[in-house]
Image 1 (cartoon, rainbow, N blue to C red):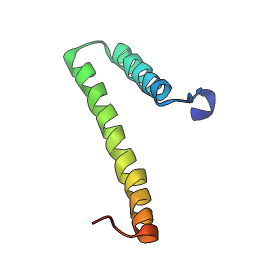
Image 2 (image 1 turned 30 degrees about the vertical axis):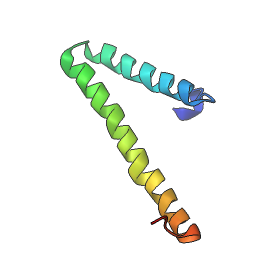
Image 3 (image 1 turned 180 degrees about the vertical axis):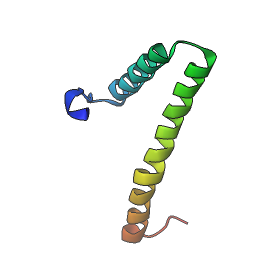
Length: 70
């Protein structure tokens, strides 16, 4: 799927891509409070996954390389 999507070159383009995906899902489910709320929750969960699986590992690696800031 990702190979077919132009991922964009900026943060703004990535936000727009996520927005469009969420909007398409809402339309597919039928626009309601529940579908809008679920799409918003999915986007927040995505941010949490990126933090937990990518950013945390990166930060831990840099702490080992450079020492902790504390």
